[in-house]
Image (tube, rainbow, N blue to C red; front, top):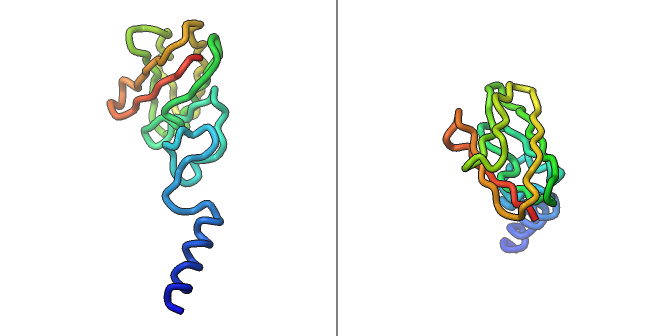
Length: 123
């Protein structure tokens, strides 16, 4: 009987989408809680000093929009200048950048916060 009582809470948790699986549609598996809402692949949120999702995959020439939901300013700076930098994105602001037409993975970061990194995969 004891084993049956342990299984019920676990089954209920899994049925409700709980647990540690934070993979949601368009999230790249790198979000938690309310941050796991479906995110279009051409949208990135700057939230809790991180990019969500941290990796997006888009067609060549697609415009990707970063939205700053934090209370502090961020920026989007691509490695090797592959895409022009966003400049400062103040709290509550958005910045749209058009991705290159050449396929590849384009890494970027927030130069204000060294732990904020992401990449755009252009197909």
